[in-house]
Length: 360
Image (cartoon, rainbow, N blue to C red):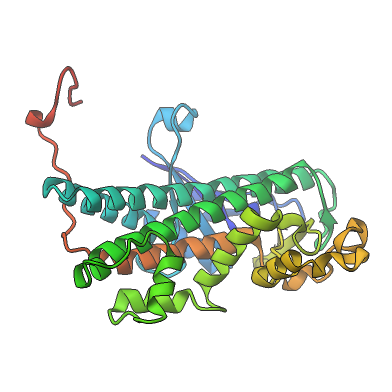
């Protein structure tokens, strides 16, 4: 028996238990409820997608302690691609197995880096869940107002928490990026050039690659992703903006939360929330560092005159974090293939148990 709760773009939820009937939260704008009768247990994800709903991830509840809140649910972010369904969770396990194999071969440094990568993948996935949770709270705070109208900007206590959750994701995502870069250095660069200076960051790899570009598939993919205009470059630019310059919510235009609706079958509308991201984070950083941002008081200081207007074309924070999480999972998968040590699933037997620990 497993209880599954899907996290949706915009803050909605789908609850599926032992009954074939699943329910959606919140109700439609019309106040009608959405009930879906599943064809099979495994068809949940495809049937939800067929309704035009995008899934962020899933909480799995398999014990009473998880249902009652004494233990956290088993959370997995859903891959945007069809296969593998749980890319990031698979990579958490893959890097844990690489760490196990390295430990057994007394490869201490590779064990350490692989362990950190496995941990950081889980950390980033959990940061994504935290952001999704605050989205739901932000959405619930607006459902009190009826009728629920789309494209209304607002600001309340949950808005700043949404942006704080996103900032935490960005920081942890870039820690993962640098751990993967360090593993690449140890397994490719150092093997080919034992005298090469130690590299522990993506920036360090990029500096080296200016003179000696990578020739292997993983290195080429990593380098291409980090070029200006590509996803890994943009991820780093957002991280640098919030760490070194200003909070996301007022780094450029002042950002408010925005109500929106998702079109459903039969003309129904599902209430949702959008937390817009500022565009061009690298340019924003440059404008603030050089002082150009502060030369026009209407832009730099007049907060109520500086509210973002074109929210329809702004990227949504939760959708962006979800996309980045899956891209990080894909790059982790590519780099795992250059490991000189094949992954090995841990096998714990009674002889491995020390003291009074018992199997149950």
